Structure formats: C-alpha cells, structure tokens
Image (cartoon, rainbow, N blue to C red; front, side, top):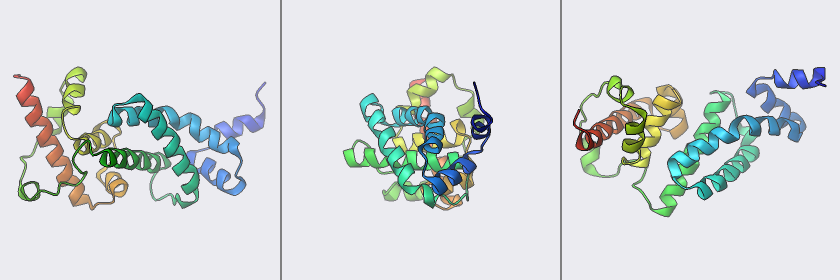
Length: 192
C-alpha cells in the first residue's frame, strides 16, 4: 500500500530531490535519481563508446561523479542537462584516453578556417533512422555527440554551450561543421 510519503516523494521535481539529498544524504533520494536516469545514461554511453562493458563501467563512474558533485549543482540549467553534460564529457574523456578518435576540438588549421556550407536541419531530420545510425557511426564522436545533443536530446545552443564549456558562437560553428561532415559522409554512402 502506498503511503502519502511515497506519493509526495514521487511528485518531487529533480531539483527538489537533489536539495533533499544534499540536506539529508539519504540514499532514498539518490535512488530516485538513479532509477530515473541510469537507463538514459547507459543509452548515451553505449551510443558513444560502442562497447557494452565500457558503457556499464561508465554508468557507474558517472554516478560516482554525480554523487560526489551533487552539491555543485547550481540550478543554472535543468538537472537532466547537468547529468547529460557529465555523461557526454565523461565519454569524450574515455575516448580521448583510449586515443580512438580525434579530439573534441579540431586542432587542425584547415578546420579552423574551413567555412562549411549551411546545412538545413531538414537534411538530417528527413533521413531514415537506419541510415542515421550508420552515418552517425562513421563520423567523429565529437560531431556525433553534438548532433545528438541538438537533435536527439533537443538541447538549446545555450545548454550545449554550458555542457561543453564553449561560447554559443563556437557551439554554432561546431554544429555547422558536424552537419557538414554528416552530409559529406551521407552523400558518399547514399545517392538520393
């Protein structure tokens, strides 16, 4: 039988749960967050890391970071955005440390001065899911991550900017370049 206390806990916003956890350190509140976000975090990790074992380890490490840094959550963004920021940054760090892919920020002079054409969002959004997955797996993880943040997670430029600690104009340029790479890889693989 559900008590009124159980009902009130279920009705709390993420921010209220975080506040109560910080104030009481009761695992009941952390468990609410874990149940709500662990599957979503795993999905993002498996999408970026492409390895189930690494994704499982990442989820545990990410939740350790969350629990250790919960008091640093300052409500400048939504709690879910803060968690996804930790997730994306963790996965990018793992990939960097494994030297599997190029760094998140393009260091080459060519990329700094290359002016990509403006790709309409409809170009990406009209592609079939199966083709999207194939192309996303062929572009660098940094480009994939920023495209997923924008189009899958529906984060604003401002939220992405906060997540990757870059200016909004830098995020717009990264997004533009990622869409250009997506289009180039798509065009090389499919003749629509």
